View 1 (cartoon, rainbow, N blue to C red):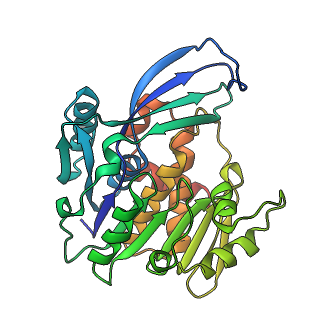
View 2 (tube, rainbow, N blue to C red):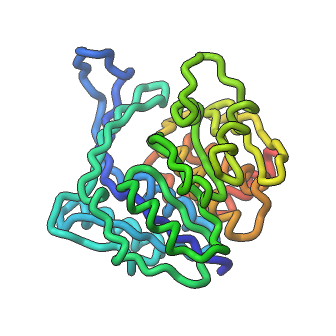
Length: 301
């Protein structure tokens, strides 16, 4: 098994409500159904990476409650190393996601114990290949963990949700991954007109060596450390739900980076993974395997 990936991030149990559409402000709708699913950006990205032949380590916090047990069991069943996962006597993190019949969703996150991660709980392997971070845990924890990893470790930061960029932190990031909204927030862009190339270069100027902006159904665009621009249009599939698609992209991309692929190729595998994710029923997504992602990749060359 090639390489080690450490994910330091959030773990939630998602309460998912399906309805005909998303409600307007002050509006109450009758939902169609409710389900409870494993979630949190850290957890979702760890699950996505674990589908690929790399070793995945998960660091985070969960409560000693029923939600925490569900979270633990889901990770353990995917052969993810949980030595850095701590259980505490506080409520686990959770979120509520609303999904319309068109597959578009909105969510509210309650971080809970995710904001109390202590770096003393997180030993870092000397041979760590890739570190994945997001913004659903305490920013100080993110700032400190990058100081602990070897200089050879490739650091991926999914700045979601977007916060004010920190120069010292961003300069240690090898790859910044954001969507269009997060890119605009990081750059304080108020215009409705979004220039992908301009945004990529401005984000790179904040410090990250490489940047990818995901564009939803329109694919993605990116810039490598040597200034190469790479992009792909979206893969056309029937959308069942976009919930978690961005995390699928990040986790898969990290795994193929870990396996030695160039960022432009790793991004294509990541896009293939996201396409499979959104076209697959939620309760069947755990059955997606590396071979399925590789086949979707080949179909879209």
